[in-house]
Length: 245
Image (tube, rainbow, N blue to C red; front, top):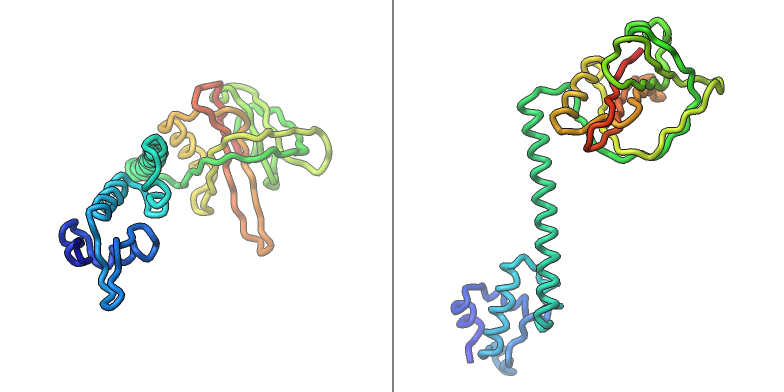
């Protein structure tokens, strides 16, 4: 039999750790001297402690170790498989974060695009036939709340756009979709932000998959903000190019 200090030195843990294991019921001493309070450990406790430490090295938290310490091997293997899956998911998320940060360092951006899933929107719009993107400025003397464009490639002729209106000239529904969204800083301007956004999509192999939406927002204090929202897919359907008022 060994006292707590002897066992701690044998295994390479602290006495404080062993007391904590005793407190939570993970490793109870074989006996406790009623007069001195000394904890005594035997071979069974030594083996149990080594199993605890082995499961810790495999990434299991103490709470889960307590549930698995006396479980059959298939149950332990299932728990480890779930740990591995979680680690791989975390690694993938960290790799994606690093890639986005590296992209921003390599190619200076005026915006910080974010991927999201957005719900459906129902809009009343007025459709426009436009010969050149520059015409939008004249057609929209006051910026609309929302501008939409749908194009299959760079505008080389007349194309269709739409602006929101109070009149029910036409109803347009945007379904739930995956998008890349960016807030345009007031000092940047939508044209440059749009170019940066589409460059970002190309570098990340995301294809435009529907209507590009440009929302003009004004808060109660009169502050303005513009958001760009581009639906995306992993494959490459016909591309949408953004125009603006």
